[in-house]
Figure 1: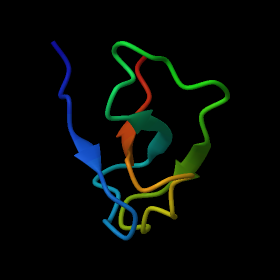
Figure 2: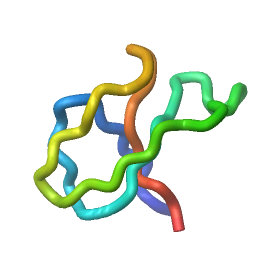
Figure 3: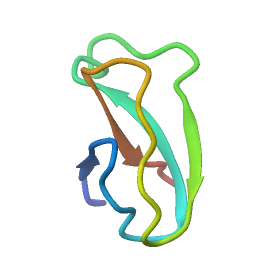
Length: 60
């Protein structure tokens, strides 16, 4: 199982990678066209589309 860590806007990325917006209710209701960002370790996460969303690292 991978880590299920979510990040807030302004947090620093723990690793290089692509991160995708994840909604609080995305398990039940998927997000259409979620925002994706490519970050390097130490970069800060940008704002999400709305305040209920977080960032998570994209899976494999």
